[in-house]
Image 1 (cartoon, rainbow, N blue to C red):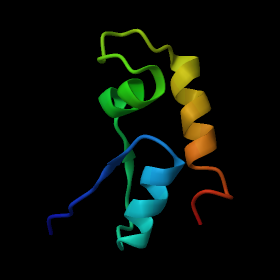
Image 2 (image 1 turned 30 degrees about the horizontal axis):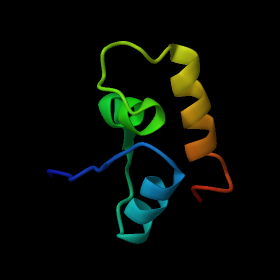
Image 3 (image 1 turned 180 degrees about the vertical axis):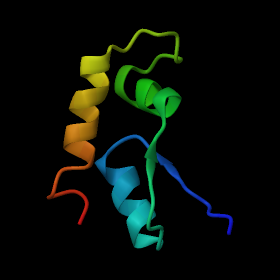
Image 4 (image 1 turned 60 degrees about the horizontal axis):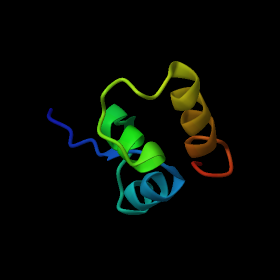
Length: 64
């Protein structure tokens, strides 16, 4: 079975994907960096940056 899985980068994109009926999401590094910093993915963002985005995007308030 083949699944289509959208990459999300913030709470809004996660909510839209869930409302569109997707059961599985992944956090895209390039999209997250572009959304968060307005820069291409050139290893500018740190692990702590991604953890912060992950915690706010996939918190219990944002994603059921």
